[in-house]
Length: 475
Image (cartoon, rainbow, N blue to C red; front, side, top):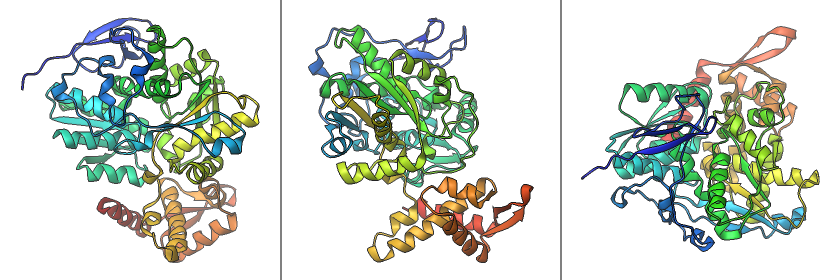
C-alpha cells in the first residue's frame, strides 16, 4: 500500500511560531509553548453541513490534516445526540437546557473521535505500534481502534482508574502497564518510552491531533442547536474545553457563526488546578486519594494556563463542585433523562445547578452540558456483578469495603479522612467497615501523630485487590 507522508503545520499558542513537520510535535522549539495544528483551508460552509448522521465523524475530514480515505478507521463515532432536557431543565427552572450525549460513541466516550483520527493517522504513516498514557477513556478508545486497525497497543495508566475503563483495554487486547500514582507520571513515562521504541504517540497531551478530533463536538452542537449562551465542559487536563473552543473559533473565522458561547470549565472541589489558575488562587494539593471522580484528577495539567485564558476570554466561569453534589447529579441525570453518565460528566449537570443558584445564568438562556462518558465505565465490579435484587445490598456493602481498601492501599488514613473520600456515608458506618476488615486481617491499625489511629492495608488485603482485578480482566 502506497504511503504518503503528511506534513503537519503547527502554530504556537504562545509566540505564534509556525512549525512544519512530518512528526507529531506538541512543544514549540522556540519558546516551549504549546503547538496546535493550523486550521485546514476549506471553502466557506453552510451551517447545515455541520448536521451529521450518527457515526458520520469522517464527514468533517476536510477540517483535518489530509488522510487518504483508504486509511480512515471508523467504528461508528460522532453524530451523537444533542437533546433538549425534558425533565431536568424543568426541575431546575431552565427553559433551554441541552445535553450533548457522547456516551453514544462506540466505547461510550467522546475520546472515540480521537481514537478514529489518531489511529487512522498512525496507519497512514505505517506505524505498527501505538502508545497511550491516560486515566482511562482515551486509552480504552485507542485500544479499540488499534485492535480494529491491526496495530499493537500499549496503554500506560496510573495505579487507580475506573475498573470499566481498564477492563475495556484488556478486552481490546491492549498491553497495560501501570506507572505512577497520577496521570502526569504516566504521561512522562509514555513520552520517554516512545522515544526509545518506534511507537506512534497517542497520548492526548502529546498529540495535537486529539484537539482536532475533539473540536468536532463543537461543530455538531452548532449544527444541532446553534450557538448556546453557555457551554459547560468538565476539565481534567483542559484539553476538551480547548478543543471545542478551537473548533468554534474556526467556524467564526469562516463566517459560519457570528458569536461564541460563554465557556464554563468545571473541576472537582479539592482538586482544581485549572480553576485555581483562573481565580489566581494558589493551588493546594488535595488530600483526595481515590474517588469516583478519579478520571478527571490531573495534578499539573499541560493545558492549565490556556484553558484558564480561554474561559476568561469567553466571559465564562471556572467552578468547582463538591463530590457529593456530583454523585447526586449523576443520579438525577440517569433518573430524569435516561443518561447514565460517569461522575466526570455529571460535573456539568451539577455546575448548572450551582450557576442557577448563584443567579449567573438566566432561565431563558440556551445552556449546553457536555456529557463526556458513560457511567458503565465507573461502577465497581462487585456492583456490576450483583445484578439480582436480593444481592444488591450485599454488593453495596462489599463495594464500600473495596473502596476503603483501595483508598488505604495508596496511603494510610484515619477514619474521618476515609469518610471524607467516600462521601455519602456516616462516620459510624465507616468504623463498622474498618472493624470488619480488621477482623479479617485485611487492614491493620497504627498510632501516628496527634494520637490518631491510622489504617494500613495488609498483604492479605492487597491479595484481595489483586483478585478483584482478575475479575475485571475476565469481564
